[in-house]
Length: 115
Image (cartoon, rainbow, N blue to C red):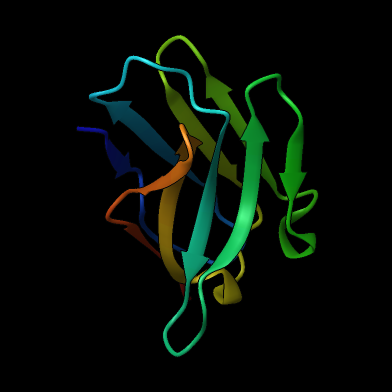
């Protein structure tokens, strides 16, 4: 059974940095894509960043230049480095992995940006 476990969320002041980490377990195949989504209270879940197995990256416009996604295909992990955080980045961040015709989701980690 595939499981995704996130870590690294927390509280930070505006302008600060956090690093989110997601590790997949229970899989013997390589995900075609891994990424991060977020959901703020009262809003729909939205894509933050994604990376496919050959390394192409895609970022939402609102994080370009501030966030960096990376993955380790051998370890089946994906990392999101978040810099210059803003209060509007406050949300629950979810790890996502796509493989064998379905999407897998982690349980989410809270990121709060507040002064």
